[in-house]
Length: 298
Image (cartoon, rainbow, N blue to C red; front, side, top):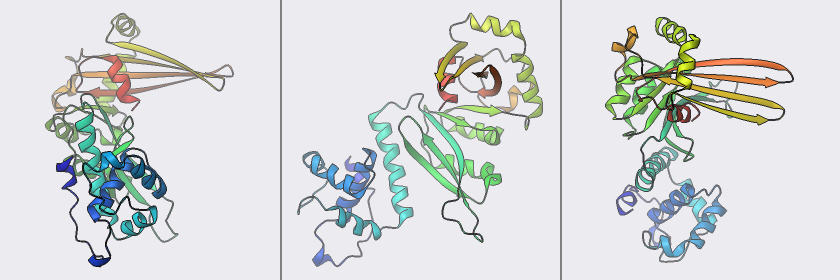
């Protein structure tokens, strides 16, 4: 904890004779409380009061716990970009320290932020690395638009500590160079395959459309899992198939570390209507359909 507290380094612009709470104390409280789920300034103050004894091991608070008004005033002095960078460092530090990173799923995905845009202002497109289980963002970069995600992904990967984790990407991010970058980070990947990789997509879809192969995989513990969910009169069945039988795959040499391919078949039944969707993947994971299912569902 001492090491991560030392990451809070910035010049205090306040008049020092009026200062009751150091920047490190206030920002440290904000970051710790936010990690614990605090959403508002009042929540942060309440968290501080409830955990004052524990926080005192790492933060000084010579004049007691700061009020939510004080916290708000201090945050107005801090560059939002700097605060975000600190939050990202802390997210990674605490997850790596307090929880095993083995097989942690990190989803890299882009979202367009339209809320604050005007007619003449382009919407921001944000590329984020997100851990759904932990509910935290590991990092993000801003790109001009979705078409620039491919060039932004390597930049985002460079900022992340991913050892032993599993990185998932949609089809746009499924590139040989990006797969190599992930392996170089000592992580694994599960990458969606669509028609933008025409030959690879064709080979994988042909394989999984061979019914006898699917029946064989259902008999193998690690090659197949199935889930059934019922909600609002809809029944949804997901079948996950994964195999490391890829010696025949022509494109194998192009994808660093690739060990398996997979398919997810989703059957949705509602009001006597049935819809079927199939999605396909390549992965550096050994065959483990349960882990594959966890990865593709986030």
